[in-house]
Length: 115
Image 1 (cartoon, rainbow, N blue to C red):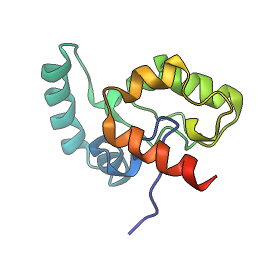
Image 2 (image 1 turned 90 degrees about the vertical axis):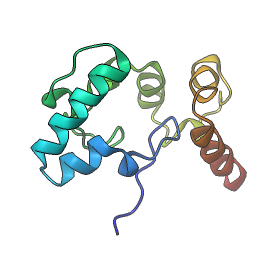
Image 3 (image 1 turned 180 degrees about the vertical axis):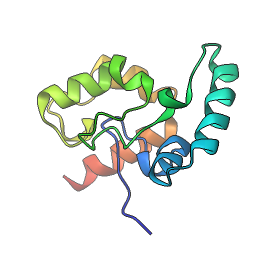
Image 4 (image 1 turned 120 degrees about the horizontal axis):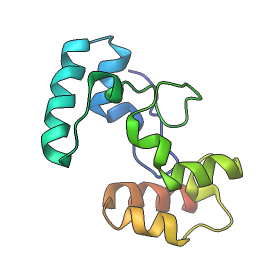
């Protein structure tokens, strides 16, 4: 089993169906995911929009939202491993995000405890 890839925000990239399908080069799974997410999020998505090598991978293949994610832009610009590693942890950007992602918040809090 591959090592977990934790995104700046605390989500586990390696658990994401877009990441899993991209790594398996499973275009059918990506097409199904694009259709599912288009319905769920009320915005059209293509298979290409779902290609992703993970937020912190350094790859250009990132799910469509990564380009507009304020948390990712901030953490990447600061050069931190995750938001938990940031001196300004608890800022409005990450707090707003993790309020809707309790698992990510718990993961970041656990990382903070180990620093």
